[in-house]
Each structure stands twice: as structure tokens, then as C-alpha cells.
Image (cartoon, rainbow, N blue to C red; front, side):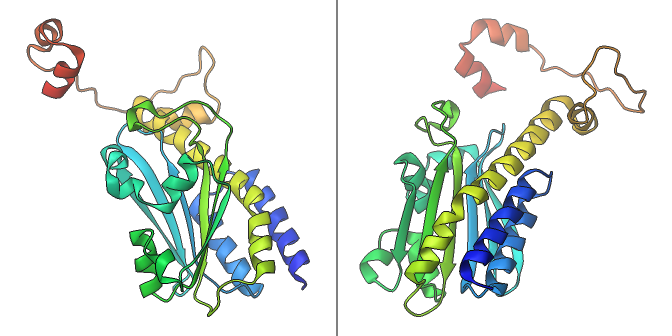
Length: 250
């Protein structure tokens, strides 16, 4: 199979995945397998993104070619304001709205730019391609202290091949970013909708809302336990304290 046929086929598959409610972790893993089977020397795929969640601020999905496994790492909202989080290639791509960057990790000066690159190079990675596809939104995650316009799909491809990717491989992988970004966006927003509904409505009710039970009269009889509770003196505190002080106390 020629490279053009391989990538067209993968692009069509990604678009089909975007139409279905598949898990993003499965999409990332299958993409890695298809690229490797097609002759691409991929050793790692990473997908990152910010989360609209009351506790979590961001997540990473990593696929490792050696073990053919994906793992998910999440960080709390407070971590997104740290220097460690912001001193990373994904953050700079999104905040500066750069569409694509290539980093040749065989160069010591390039490796020194980010702690991540030193770690990857120590594991044999020679070339690292990162891209950001913006969703075109001007809103910002105010509680994360992030500038507007950072909502989008961010991903990277890495190789251990000596000399890195060829120029044609770079062009092909860069071309694949748009259909990959669409698959990421659809899966992520479905996941976020599920998480928010489960958080504020509970898991059962949230799932039923997503199934379309939203009209007046839509109801189910379920077995459950109700536990009314309150913080003693909370109303008095709310009157006496400013909002920030009140939430710090409770």
C-alpha cells in the first residue's frame, strides 16, 4: 500500500470514528497500530487537553508502541497553574496558537527546552512532532487562569528511528491532524458532557438525559437512598463572610 493510500484510509477511518461514540483511548491505540502496521516508525502517541470538570483540570492519553497499551493521566485543576504544567510543549502550542512544531531530540539544545524532551531522549526518542488544532472559540477557562483560545485538540507523534521521521512522513502526519482532531473533539466533548451530568445529576440520571429523557413527564421509578445534610451554621457564615472566605471555610 502506498503512503497516500495508507493515510487516506486512516483519515476515512478517523472520520468514521468521529461519527460514533467510541472511547478516545481506543481511537488513539488503534491509530497507533494502523500507523505501525503501515510502516511508520511510531513509538509513542500522546493526546492532551483541558477539562471542564469541577476537580480535574487536564488529561493526557499516551499510547506506547512497545507494549501496545494506552494509559490516561489526569491532573487536578490546581496543577494547571503551576510552572511545571506550563513549562511543557503542549501548553506553549495552545497558548501561542501554533499549528505545528517539530523537535529533533538528537540535538542537545532542543532537548534542553523542556524537561519532557530530556526524558523522551533518555528513552531513545529522536524526533517529536506536536500539533494544535484550535476549536476557534474565544472563551477562556477563567478558573484555570488560562488565556482565551486555548480550547482545541493537541497531540504528538514520536519515533526512535535514527535521524527521525522523513520529510514525507512529517507531511503525512501533519495532514492527518485535522481528521484526528475531529475524532478527539467529538470523543472529548461526549466524555465531558457525561462527566458533568454524572457530577450534577448523578450517574443514572445523567446517563438517561444523554439517552434523550429530557421531556416533561419522562420519569423512572428507582430504588435509592436520600441523605439530606447541611453544614451547621452555614447560612450564618454565608451572611457574615465574603464569598471567597465562605468557600475557604466549607
